[in-house]
Image 1 (cartoon, helix red, strand yellow):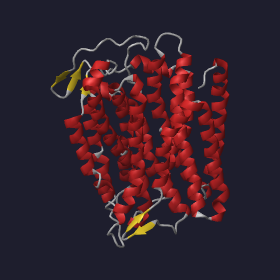
Image 2 (cartoon, helix red, strand yellow):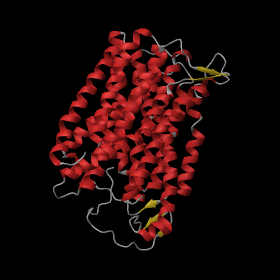
Image 3 (cartoon, one colour):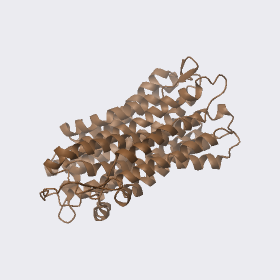
Image 4 (cartoon, one colour):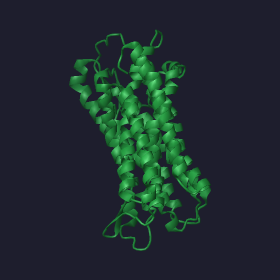
Length: 458
Protein backbone atom coordinates (compact mmCIF):
# COMPACT_ATOMS: atom_id res chain seq x y z
CA UNK A 1 0.00 0.00 0.00
CA UNK A 2 1.15 3.58 -0.38
CA UNK A 3 0.69 4.16 3.34
CA UNK A 4 3.33 2.55 5.53
CA UNK A 5 5.31 2.79 8.71
CA UNK A 6 7.93 5.42 7.79
CA UNK A 7 10.63 4.02 10.08
CA UNK A 8 13.63 2.39 8.37
CA UNK A 9 13.23 -1.35 8.28
CA UNK A 10 16.61 -1.84 9.93
CA UNK A 11 15.62 0.02 13.06
CA UNK A 12 14.59 -1.79 16.22
CA UNK A 13 11.08 -0.91 17.34
CA UNK A 14 11.25 0.99 20.64
CA UNK A 15 9.16 -0.15 23.56
CA UNK A 16 5.72 1.35 23.22
CA UNK A 17 4.12 3.59 25.76
CA UNK A 18 0.76 2.58 27.17
CA UNK A 19 -2.10 2.88 24.71
CA UNK A 20 -4.19 5.98 25.14
CA UNK A 21 -7.83 6.13 24.00
CA UNK A 22 -9.26 9.51 23.06
CA UNK A 23 -12.80 10.56 22.11
CA UNK A 24 -13.80 9.61 18.58
CA UNK A 25 -12.18 6.18 19.11
CA UNK A 26 -8.69 7.51 18.47
CA UNK A 27 -5.78 5.43 19.79
CA UNK A 28 -2.37 6.95 20.56
CA UNK A 29 0.98 5.15 21.02
CA UNK A 30 0.01 2.22 18.79
CA UNK A 31 3.01 -0.04 18.08
CA UNK A 32 2.17 -3.63 17.07
CA UNK A 33 5.87 -4.54 17.03
CA UNK A 34 5.96 -4.16 20.82
CA UNK A 35 5.33 -7.69 22.08
CA UNK A 36 3.88 -6.66 25.43
CA UNK A 37 1.43 -4.19 23.91
CA UNK A 38 0.45 -6.66 21.18
CA UNK A 39 -0.22 -9.56 23.55
CA UNK A 40 -2.08 -7.55 26.17
CA UNK A 41 -4.31 -5.27 24.07
CA UNK A 42 -3.13 -4.95 20.49
CA UNK A 43 -4.07 -8.37 19.12
CA UNK A 44 -7.73 -8.10 20.20
CA UNK A 45 -8.04 -4.54 18.89
CA UNK A 46 -6.48 -5.48 15.54
CA UNK A 47 -8.74 -8.54 15.13
CA UNK A 48 -11.84 -6.47 15.86
CA UNK A 49 -10.88 -3.88 13.26
CA UNK A 50 -10.02 -6.58 10.73
CA UNK A 51 -13.45 -8.23 11.04
CA UNK A 52 -15.33 -5.03 10.30
CA UNK A 53 -12.88 -4.04 7.58
CA UNK A 54 -13.50 -7.36 5.80
CA UNK A 55 -17.26 -6.90 6.04
CA UNK A 56 -17.15 -3.34 4.67
CA UNK A 57 -14.78 -4.30 1.85
CA UNK A 58 -16.92 -7.33 1.01
CA UNK A 59 -19.89 -5.00 0.47
CA UNK A 60 -17.67 -2.75 -1.63
CA UNK A 61 -16.94 -5.60 -4.04
CA UNK A 62 -20.65 -6.53 -4.06
CA UNK A 63 -21.66 -3.04 -5.16
CA UNK A 64 -18.73 -2.89 -7.60
CA UNK A 65 -20.08 -5.96 -9.41
CA UNK A 66 -23.84 -5.24 -9.32
CA UNK A 67 -24.06 -3.92 -12.86
CA UNK A 68 -22.30 -6.99 -14.27
CA UNK A 69 -25.30 -9.00 -13.06
CA UNK A 70 -28.09 -6.53 -13.74
CA UNK A 71 -27.22 -5.74 -17.36
CA UNK A 72 -28.04 -9.29 -18.41
CA UNK A 73 -31.65 -8.77 -17.30
CA UNK A 74 -32.16 -5.24 -18.65
CA UNK A 75 -33.48 -6.30 -22.11
CA UNK A 76 -36.09 -8.57 -20.50
CA UNK A 77 -37.15 -5.64 -18.31
CA UNK A 78 -37.87 -3.48 -21.37
CA UNK A 79 -34.61 -1.53 -21.74
CA UNK A 80 -33.54 -0.88 -25.32
CA UNK A 81 -29.74 -0.91 -25.18
CA UNK A 82 -27.13 -1.68 -27.82
CA UNK A 83 -24.37 -4.21 -27.24
CA UNK A 84 -21.85 -1.41 -26.93
CA UNK A 85 -23.94 0.38 -24.30
CA UNK A 86 -24.30 -2.80 -22.25
CA UNK A 87 -20.55 -3.32 -22.21
CA UNK A 88 -20.05 0.28 -21.13
CA UNK A 89 -22.33 -0.37 -18.15
CA UNK A 90 -20.23 -3.44 -17.29
CA UNK A 91 -16.86 -1.73 -17.61
CA UNK A 92 -17.56 1.74 -16.18
CA UNK A 93 -17.50 0.66 -12.48
CA UNK A 94 -14.03 -0.82 -12.98
CA UNK A 95 -12.75 2.32 -14.69
CA UNK A 96 -13.90 4.53 -11.81
CA UNK A 97 -12.96 2.02 -9.10
CA UNK A 98 -9.41 1.64 -10.39
CA UNK A 99 -8.99 5.41 -10.54
CA UNK A 100 -10.35 5.91 -7.01
CA UNK A 101 -7.92 3.39 -5.52
CA UNK A 102 -5.07 5.90 -5.58
CA UNK A 103 -6.74 8.74 -3.61
CA UNK A 104 -8.53 6.24 -1.35
CA UNK A 105 -5.15 4.96 -0.16
CA UNK A 106 -4.39 8.34 1.42
CA UNK A 107 -7.75 8.78 3.13
CA UNK A 108 -6.93 6.62 6.15
CA UNK A 109 -4.00 8.81 7.32
CA UNK A 110 -6.04 11.92 6.60
CA UNK A 111 -9.31 11.02 8.34
CA UNK A 112 -8.63 7.87 10.37
CA UNK A 113 -9.38 4.25 9.50
CA UNK A 114 -12.64 4.06 11.45
CA UNK A 115 -13.90 7.39 10.17
CA UNK A 116 -13.10 6.64 6.54
CA UNK A 117 -14.65 3.16 6.74
CA UNK A 118 -17.91 4.80 7.87
CA UNK A 119 -17.74 7.30 5.01
CA UNK A 120 -16.65 4.84 2.32
CA UNK A 121 -19.34 2.35 3.35
CA UNK A 122 -21.94 5.12 3.40
CA UNK A 123 -20.99 6.11 -0.15
CA UNK A 124 -22.12 2.64 -1.26
CA UNK A 125 -25.70 3.67 -0.50
CA UNK A 126 -25.63 6.07 -3.46
CA UNK A 127 -25.04 3.52 -6.25
CA UNK A 128 -27.19 0.89 -4.50
CA UNK A 129 -30.26 3.09 -4.17
CA UNK A 130 -29.51 4.80 -7.49
CA UNK A 131 -29.50 1.44 -9.26
CA UNK A 132 -32.85 0.53 -7.70
CA UNK A 133 -34.42 3.76 -8.92
CA UNK A 134 -32.88 3.67 -12.39
CA UNK A 135 -33.77 0.08 -13.31
CA UNK A 136 -37.38 0.47 -12.14
CA UNK A 137 -38.18 2.50 -15.26
CA UNK A 138 -37.22 1.26 -18.76
CA UNK A 139 -37.39 4.87 -19.97
CA UNK A 140 -34.35 5.82 -17.89
CA UNK A 141 -31.84 7.41 -20.32
CA UNK A 142 -28.61 5.55 -20.97
CA UNK A 143 -26.60 8.52 -19.68
CA UNK A 144 -28.27 8.21 -16.27
CA UNK A 145 -27.64 4.47 -16.19
CA UNK A 146 -23.98 5.06 -17.06
CA UNK A 147 -23.61 7.68 -14.32
CA UNK A 148 -25.01 5.36 -11.67
CA UNK A 149 -22.81 2.53 -12.94
CA UNK A 150 -19.83 4.87 -12.58
CA UNK A 151 -20.80 5.57 -8.97
CA UNK A 152 -20.58 1.83 -8.30
CA UNK A 153 -16.85 2.43 -8.64
CA UNK A 154 -16.96 3.60 -5.01
CA UNK A 155 -16.93 -0.11 -4.17
CA UNK A 156 -13.70 -0.69 -6.09
CA UNK A 157 -11.95 2.16 -4.32
CA UNK A 158 -12.73 0.63 -0.93
CA UNK A 159 -10.09 -2.06 -1.44
CA UNK A 160 -7.22 0.43 -1.30
CA UNK A 161 -8.32 2.24 1.85
CA UNK A 162 -9.23 -1.00 3.60
CA UNK A 163 -5.87 -2.60 2.88
CA UNK A 164 -3.89 0.50 3.85
CA UNK A 165 -5.84 0.71 7.12
CA UNK A 166 -5.26 -2.90 8.14
CA UNK A 167 -1.54 -2.75 7.40
CA UNK A 168 -1.15 -0.31 10.33
CA UNK A 169 -2.78 -2.66 12.82
CA UNK A 170 -0.55 -5.73 12.44
CA UNK A 171 3.14 -6.46 13.10
CA UNK A 172 5.28 -7.17 10.07
CA UNK A 173 5.28 -10.91 10.73
CA UNK A 174 1.48 -11.05 10.53
CA UNK A 175 0.70 -8.45 7.86
CA UNK A 176 0.60 -10.99 5.05
CA UNK A 177 -1.94 -13.16 6.84
CA UNK A 178 -4.16 -10.22 7.81
CA UNK A 179 -4.03 -8.56 4.40
CA UNK A 180 -4.70 -11.91 2.73
CA UNK A 181 -7.88 -12.38 4.77
CA UNK A 182 -8.93 -8.82 4.03
CA UNK A 183 -8.37 -9.21 0.28
CA UNK A 184 -10.06 -12.61 0.11
CA UNK A 185 -13.10 -11.34 1.98
CA UNK A 186 -13.43 -8.50 -0.48
CA UNK A 187 -12.94 -10.61 -3.61
CA UNK A 188 -15.66 -13.02 -2.48
CA UNK A 189 -18.12 -10.12 -2.69
CA UNK A 190 -17.98 -10.37 -6.49
CA UNK A 191 -19.05 -14.00 -6.38
CA UNK A 192 -21.76 -13.46 -3.76
CA UNK A 193 -23.30 -10.62 -5.78
CA UNK A 194 -23.44 -12.80 -8.89
CA UNK A 195 -24.99 -15.64 -6.91
CA UNK A 196 -27.52 -13.73 -4.81
CA UNK A 197 -28.81 -11.05 -7.20
CA UNK A 198 -30.24 -13.41 -9.88
CA UNK A 199 -32.08 -15.32 -7.15
CA UNK A 200 -33.50 -12.21 -5.51
CA UNK A 201 -34.73 -10.56 -8.72
CA UNK A 202 -36.46 -13.74 -9.93
CA UNK A 203 -37.90 -15.27 -6.75
CA UNK A 204 -41.67 -14.83 -6.70
CA UNK A 205 -41.49 -12.56 -9.74
CA UNK A 206 -43.53 -14.81 -12.05
CA UNK A 207 -43.34 -13.24 -15.52
CA UNK A 208 -41.63 -10.06 -14.34
CA UNK A 209 -38.32 -9.20 -12.68
CA UNK A 210 -37.81 -7.39 -9.39
CA UNK A 211 -34.74 -5.56 -10.66
CA UNK A 212 -34.78 -2.79 -8.01
CA UNK A 213 -34.11 -5.43 -5.36
CA UNK A 214 -30.65 -5.93 -6.87
CA UNK A 215 -29.63 -2.69 -5.19
CA UNK A 216 -32.05 -2.45 -2.28
CA UNK A 217 -31.16 -5.76 -0.62
CA UNK A 218 -27.69 -4.45 0.23
CA UNK A 219 -28.87 -1.24 1.91
CA UNK A 220 -29.51 -2.83 5.35
CA UNK A 221 -26.11 -4.53 5.28
CA UNK A 222 -24.39 -1.28 4.34
CA UNK A 223 -26.08 0.40 7.30
CA UNK A 224 -24.90 -2.43 9.55
CA UNK A 225 -21.35 -1.91 8.27
CA UNK A 226 -21.53 1.81 9.02
CA UNK A 227 -22.86 1.28 12.54
CA UNK A 228 -20.41 -1.54 13.21
CA UNK A 229 -17.47 0.57 12.03
CA UNK A 230 -18.66 3.45 14.21
CA UNK A 231 -18.97 1.32 17.34
CA UNK A 232 -16.20 -1.25 16.90
CA UNK A 233 -13.40 0.19 14.76
CA UNK A 234 -10.63 2.60 15.74
CA UNK A 235 -8.52 5.43 14.34
CA UNK A 236 -4.74 5.24 14.82
CA UNK A 237 -2.85 8.48 15.28
CA UNK A 238 0.30 6.58 14.23
CA UNK A 239 -1.06 6.10 10.68
CA UNK A 240 0.93 8.40 8.41
CA UNK A 241 0.98 8.82 4.66
CA UNK A 242 4.33 7.93 3.10
CA UNK A 243 4.36 10.33 0.16
CA UNK A 244 8.13 10.08 -0.29
CA UNK A 245 7.95 6.32 -0.77
CA UNK A 246 5.15 6.69 -3.30
CA UNK A 247 7.14 9.16 -5.36
CA UNK A 248 10.22 6.95 -5.17
CA UNK A 249 8.22 3.91 -6.26
CA UNK A 250 6.85 5.77 -9.27
CA UNK A 251 10.42 6.31 -10.49
CA UNK A 252 11.19 2.59 -10.32
CA UNK A 253 10.89 0.92 -13.77
CA UNK A 254 9.90 -2.38 -12.21
CA UNK A 255 6.77 -0.82 -10.76
CA UNK A 256 5.48 -0.35 -14.30
CA UNK A 257 6.54 -3.82 -15.46
CA UNK A 258 4.83 -5.42 -12.48
CA UNK A 259 1.75 -3.25 -13.02
CA UNK A 260 1.47 -4.62 -16.56
CA UNK A 261 1.73 -8.17 -15.22
CA UNK A 262 -0.91 -7.39 -12.59
CA UNK A 263 -3.26 -6.17 -15.30
CA UNK A 264 -2.80 -9.62 -16.79
CA UNK A 265 -3.61 -11.44 -13.53
CA UNK A 266 -5.90 -9.35 -11.33
CA UNK A 267 -7.19 -7.40 -14.33
CA UNK A 268 -8.20 -10.68 -15.95
CA UNK A 269 -9.91 -11.82 -12.76
CA UNK A 270 -11.99 -8.70 -12.23
CA UNK A 271 -12.54 -8.12 -15.96
CA UNK A 272 -13.78 -11.61 -16.76
CA UNK A 273 -15.71 -11.77 -13.48
CA UNK A 274 -17.63 -8.67 -14.55
CA UNK A 275 -18.29 -9.86 -18.09
CA UNK A 276 -18.87 -13.56 -17.45
CA UNK A 277 -22.66 -13.31 -16.88
CA UNK A 278 -22.98 -11.52 -20.23
CA UNK A 279 -20.74 -14.05 -22.01
CA UNK A 280 -22.80 -16.94 -20.69
CA UNK A 281 -26.08 -15.29 -21.66
CA UNK A 282 -24.89 -14.49 -25.21
CA UNK A 283 -23.11 -17.75 -25.92
CA UNK A 284 -25.81 -20.01 -24.48
CA UNK A 285 -29.05 -17.97 -24.67
CA UNK A 286 -31.19 -21.05 -24.04
CA UNK A 287 -29.47 -21.72 -20.73
CA UNK A 288 -31.20 -19.41 -18.27
CA UNK A 289 -29.85 -21.03 -15.13
CA UNK A 290 -31.05 -23.60 -12.65
CA UNK A 291 -34.64 -23.14 -11.49
CA UNK A 292 -35.26 -23.62 -7.78
CA UNK A 293 -38.93 -22.95 -7.18
CA UNK A 294 -39.66 -19.53 -8.60
CA UNK A 295 -36.02 -18.43 -8.30
CA UNK A 296 -33.25 -18.87 -10.85
CA UNK A 297 -29.67 -19.67 -9.93
CA UNK A 298 -27.10 -18.86 -12.60
CA UNK A 299 -23.60 -20.32 -12.68
CA UNK A 300 -21.71 -17.13 -13.52
CA UNK A 301 -20.80 -16.69 -9.84
CA UNK A 302 -18.53 -19.75 -10.05
CA UNK A 303 -15.87 -17.81 -11.96
CA UNK A 304 -15.38 -15.13 -9.30
CA UNK A 305 -15.65 -17.76 -6.56
CA UNK A 306 -12.93 -19.98 -8.03
CA UNK A 307 -10.65 -17.00 -8.68
CA UNK A 308 -11.09 -15.67 -5.14
CA UNK A 309 -10.41 -19.01 -3.49
CA UNK A 310 -7.37 -19.67 -5.68
CA UNK A 311 -5.62 -16.41 -4.84
CA UNK A 312 -4.15 -17.46 -1.45
CA UNK A 313 -2.68 -20.58 -3.03
CA UNK A 314 -0.81 -18.41 -5.51
CA UNK A 315 0.98 -16.76 -2.60
CA UNK A 316 1.74 -20.11 -0.94
CA UNK A 317 3.09 -21.61 -4.16
CA UNK A 318 5.19 -18.49 -4.74
CA UNK A 319 6.68 -18.84 -1.25
CA UNK A 320 7.76 -22.37 -2.11
CA UNK A 321 8.76 -22.19 -5.76
CA UNK A 322 9.18 -18.46 -6.42
CA UNK A 323 6.65 -15.97 -7.73
CA UNK A 324 8.21 -15.80 -11.20
CA UNK A 325 7.79 -19.51 -11.91
CA UNK A 326 4.20 -19.56 -10.63
CA UNK A 327 3.28 -16.41 -12.57
CA UNK A 328 4.71 -17.92 -15.77
CA UNK A 329 2.66 -21.04 -15.11
CA UNK A 330 -0.45 -18.94 -14.47
CA UNK A 331 -0.15 -17.07 -17.77
CA UNK A 332 0.46 -20.36 -19.58
CA UNK A 333 -2.71 -21.92 -18.17
CA UNK A 334 -4.72 -18.73 -18.77
CA UNK A 335 -3.69 -18.70 -22.41
CA UNK A 336 -4.50 -22.39 -22.81
CA UNK A 337 -7.86 -21.87 -21.11
CA UNK A 338 -8.90 -19.14 -23.55
CA UNK A 339 -7.50 -21.08 -26.50
CA UNK A 340 -9.60 -24.06 -25.42
CA UNK A 341 -12.69 -21.83 -25.35
CA UNK A 342 -12.02 -20.72 -28.93
CA UNK A 343 -11.43 -24.27 -30.19
CA UNK A 344 -14.50 -25.76 -28.50
CA UNK A 345 -16.99 -22.96 -29.17
CA UNK A 346 -18.30 -24.64 -32.38
CA UNK A 347 -19.43 -27.63 -30.29
CA UNK A 348 -21.76 -25.37 -28.27
CA UNK A 349 -21.06 -27.51 -25.21
CA UNK A 350 -21.98 -25.54 -22.09
CA UNK A 351 -20.08 -27.79 -19.69
CA UNK A 352 -16.83 -27.49 -21.66
CA UNK A 353 -17.26 -23.71 -22.01
CA UNK A 354 -17.81 -23.34 -18.26
CA UNK A 355 -14.90 -25.64 -17.39
CA UNK A 356 -12.47 -23.77 -19.64
CA UNK A 357 -13.38 -20.46 -18.05
CA UNK A 358 -13.13 -21.88 -14.53
CA UNK A 359 -9.59 -23.00 -15.38
CA UNK A 360 -8.90 -19.44 -16.54
CA UNK A 361 -10.31 -17.98 -13.30
CA UNK A 362 -8.32 -20.40 -11.14
CA UNK A 363 -5.09 -19.54 -12.96
CA UNK A 364 -5.82 -15.81 -12.75
CA UNK A 365 -6.42 -16.12 -9.00
CA UNK A 366 -3.14 -18.00 -8.52
CA UNK A 367 -1.40 -15.39 -10.66
CA UNK A 368 -2.81 -12.61 -8.47
CA UNK A 369 -1.17 -14.11 -5.42
CA UNK A 370 2.14 -14.96 -7.07
CA UNK A 371 2.57 -11.59 -8.78
CA UNK A 372 1.81 -9.77 -5.52
CA UNK A 373 4.39 -11.97 -3.79
CA UNK A 374 7.09 -10.96 -6.29
CA UNK A 375 6.89 -7.24 -5.48
CA UNK A 376 8.68 -7.09 -2.08
CA UNK A 377 11.47 -9.39 -3.29
CA UNK A 378 12.11 -7.36 -6.43
CA UNK A 379 12.14 -4.05 -4.57
CA UNK A 380 14.50 -5.51 -1.97
CA UNK A 381 16.93 -6.47 -4.75
CA UNK A 382 16.59 -3.01 -6.29
CA UNK A 383 17.20 -1.15 -3.03
CA UNK A 384 20.31 1.01 -3.13
CA UNK A 385 19.94 3.37 -0.21
CA UNK A 386 17.58 6.30 0.23
CA UNK A 387 13.98 5.23 0.67
CA UNK A 388 14.01 1.73 2.18
CA UNK A 389 12.95 -1.32 0.21
CA UNK A 390 10.03 -2.13 2.50
CA UNK A 391 8.62 1.38 2.23
CA UNK A 392 8.93 1.46 -1.58
CA UNK A 393 7.47 -2.03 -1.88
CA UNK A 394 4.50 -1.08 0.27
CA UNK A 395 3.91 2.01 -1.85
CA UNK A 396 4.27 -0.03 -5.03
CA UNK A 397 1.68 -2.56 -3.85
CA UNK A 398 -0.95 0.16 -3.63
CA UNK A 399 -0.09 1.69 -6.99
CA UNK A 400 0.12 -1.67 -8.75
CA UNK A 401 -3.24 -2.77 -7.32
CA UNK A 402 -4.80 0.41 -8.72
CA UNK A 403 -3.28 0.02 -12.17
CA UNK A 404 -4.15 -3.68 -12.32
CA UNK A 405 -7.81 -2.93 -11.70
CA UNK A 406 -7.99 -1.15 -15.07
CA UNK A 407 -8.12 -4.62 -16.58
CA UNK A 408 -11.71 -4.67 -15.40
CA UNK A 409 -12.36 -1.87 -17.89
CA UNK A 410 -10.25 -3.05 -20.82
CA UNK A 411 -11.49 -6.64 -21.03
CA UNK A 412 -15.22 -5.80 -21.35
CA UNK A 413 -14.41 -3.02 -23.80
CA UNK A 414 -12.36 -5.32 -26.04
CA UNK A 415 -15.08 -7.97 -25.93
CA UNK A 416 -17.77 -5.38 -26.69
CA UNK A 417 -15.79 -4.00 -29.63
CA UNK A 418 -15.29 -7.53 -30.98
CA UNK A 419 -18.98 -8.33 -30.72
CA UNK A 420 -20.20 -5.11 -32.36
CA UNK A 421 -17.52 -5.08 -35.09
CA UNK A 422 -17.18 -8.75 -35.98
CA UNK A 423 -20.38 -10.19 -34.53
CA UNK A 424 -18.33 -12.63 -32.48
CA UNK A 425 -16.23 -12.77 -29.31
CA UNK A 426 -13.57 -14.94 -30.94
CA UNK A 427 -11.34 -12.07 -32.19
CA UNK A 428 -11.24 -10.60 -28.68
CA UNK A 429 -10.52 -13.98 -27.12
CA UNK A 430 -7.69 -14.47 -29.61
CA UNK A 431 -6.19 -11.12 -28.65
CA UNK A 432 -6.23 -12.19 -24.99
CA UNK A 433 -4.29 -15.34 -25.85
CA UNK A 434 -1.69 -13.18 -27.59
CA UNK A 435 -1.57 -10.84 -24.57
CA UNK A 436 -0.93 -13.75 -22.19
CA UNK A 437 1.93 -14.91 -24.40
CA UNK A 438 3.44 -11.40 -24.18
CA UNK A 439 2.95 -11.31 -20.39
CA UNK A 440 4.59 -14.73 -20.10
CA UNK A 441 7.56 -13.65 -22.20
CA UNK A 442 7.91 -10.43 -20.20
CA UNK A 443 7.88 -12.31 -16.89
CA UNK A 444 10.42 -14.85 -18.09
CA UNK A 445 12.66 -12.37 -19.90
CA UNK A 446 12.92 -9.91 -17.01
CA UNK A 447 12.49 -11.85 -13.79
CA UNK A 448 13.93 -15.28 -14.60
CA UNK A 449 17.03 -13.42 -15.75
CA UNK A 450 17.05 -11.27 -12.61
CA UNK A 451 16.63 -14.36 -10.46
CA UNK A 452 19.55 -16.12 -12.14
CA UNK A 453 21.80 -13.07 -11.99
CA UNK A 454 21.09 -12.30 -8.33
CA UNK A 455 21.00 -15.89 -7.11
CA UNK A 456 17.70 -15.07 -5.38
CA UNK A 457 14.47 -16.91 -6.03
CA UNK A 458 12.02 -14.19 -7.09
